[in-house]
Length: 333
Image 1 (cartoon, rainbow, N blue to C red):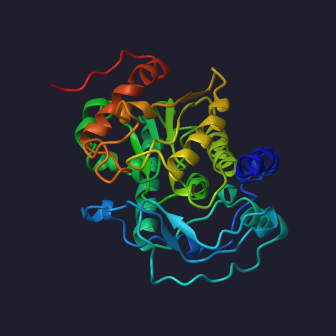
Image 2 (cartoon, rainbow, N blue to C red):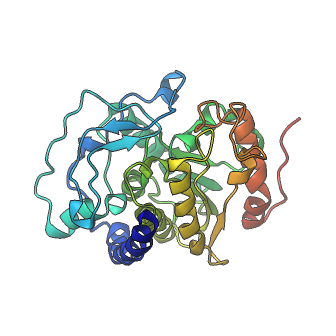
Image 3 (cartoon, rainbow, N blue to C red):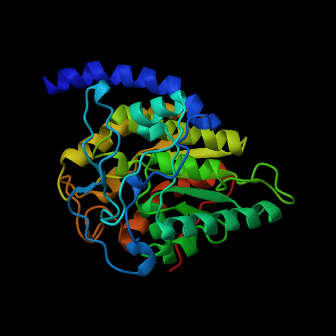
């Protein structure tokens, strides 16, 4: 029965997403004020503290799209512990299209997060992008959540080997969902990159996002959010090649979250047009032969170790170097 309802429900959501995605990209579909419902507290990735994310953690309740047949009683993050300080406040003066987007497809409704550290990291990213737009020297953008942000932690040595010379920019923030990335791209994370004062525009964007949507978002909606991100990148930086990565596997053994991410990946692989957008599912590189994940690769069965980042870099390097039009890099010995 569950499988039947999924088969019937998914096409409806795909059609709805196709209708609302252009609004998300254009900026007409957005929440007027910062929504504390997407607040996740202090980011351990910024403080150096270890993260222990083995289970789904509830967030404060937000508007429930019950009319679509699923009641999202809680919002959950898989990157950050839920904030116990922030109370959900109603969004003021939201017009009809905005209300429809926020209530029906949250993954498509651009929204920031209230956390001070998040706002500060977003501002720092904007400053880095501003510098890159002035020099025209950014080669690659990495867009995502804490797994992307982790290139600055466990993955920093691998980053230096593969991406430092390409003057790559890390646009990952822990705890982010597709809706947060959409807001960031609309609010400075890609500002001025299309027409830099000197040099050239970035050639490639690597996108890996969606695992934080998994707990309460149907796969078709998460996929629609990823599709909107790709469209927005193409709009903000015309000509950029977008390498969309399937959401990485998670959990020690195949379970609910991993299965939902796999369903998302099955949808977003159709984004690959062989011209400007390319899809790669490198999930198998993180798995043992029996489908399990070891702590040596993902210590908490979600975030990557140094070896995990090495596997990521080596898996995408042939395609990335092809898109950049340069020889493949090799890790430093």
